[in-house]
Amino acid sequence: MTDIAWIELALTAARPQALGALLRYFRDLDTAEEAFQEACLRAIRTWPEKGAPRDPAAWLIFVGRNSGIDAVRKRSKNDPLPEETAFSDLSDAENDIADRLDNSNYRDDILRLMFICCHPDLPNTQQIALALRIVSGLTVPQIARAFLVSEAAMEQRITRAKARVAKAGVPFETPGAAERAERLGIVSAMIYLVFNEGYSAGITNPDNAAFCEEAIRLGRLLLRIFPAEPEIMGLTALMMLQHSRARARFDGQGQIILLDDQDRSLWDRKLIGEALVLLDKAIRHRQPGPYQVQAAISALHARAARPEDTDWKEIDMLYGLLERIQPSPVVTLNRAVAVSKLDGPEAALDLIAPLAEKLDGYFYFHGVRGGLLMQVGRHGEARVAFDRAIALANSPAECAHIRQQIDKLGAVASPVE
Image (cartoon, rainbow, N blue to C red; front, side, top):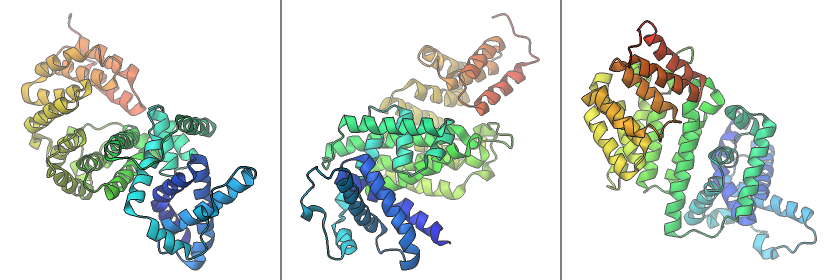
């Protein structure tokens, strides 16, 4: 591995902890980010010659802190500075700072950094962009390509997000147990947003598809600092299980391949195995949550060697549990697929009929409904549903998939309905 390659890996791994600590110190996102970038530049210059420090994160915090203080001095010569003892250290700085990086600060710094990125004042697109830029360190061009916008537009989006966060006055004190639990839930939702942004893109946009791996990396990071949280285990297992099918979800032309039609030999069995172990560990806590239940559903698909081996009865029961834990029309829509396998398409149509108004603007509702209508021979209604799905498609792959379903109706005369 080249010097630059191993340094890049070390900087990426240390980024959340180092940037989180710098944010706690400077209480300003831009200042912390600039300080971290300056520390990274110094690492690139010095580490190849002197070797990596014992604790890269501690080194980056120390160098970044001093760099940030120098920058503050230059910008604000007339403003009062903290006492010199608050940031001056003439002893073995790296070792001392490493000793002071206790687990509590490490955990809360990273949680605070993630929490800032998913502030409720920010729309989902800004949450994802800010998290990818600040926590993951992706470049603006990478994020812009994923969202199919210009670099200038993405730069403005991230700048506006930072401004909103600064205006909101996010607290920097160590959160209590109740607030930490609330933050974990919000952070988990943000990470899953990042994952779904990549999952929905598939192979149509490689920059966007890489978000799945980044979301899994963030999930693993949360697991390291909250190793006893079953919902974090469930979230990470869920993302692993879904991502394990990445190579089988699309054909060579980028067309969607449904789960029952996928080549299961292409599924990543190593990733599935890791996810199943993690899910089993979560279940042993006997504290079921939405991510654990969704992961358990994905696990049943992963364990089935063939589509016909899928335990649809258990999946239906799990969706019933999920409806009680987290009621949602989308959950009921997903349950309808299991119901159609167990009781037939008519029963599934009856189940989703009350959802029509709530999910009228949801692509998957009309796609699922069209497929069920086609199964029972109501081809005219199926065509209308598919047309509505095409109008709501989020990607060319989704649109092409629905057109394939319409083609199946092509030669069938629509009955009077």
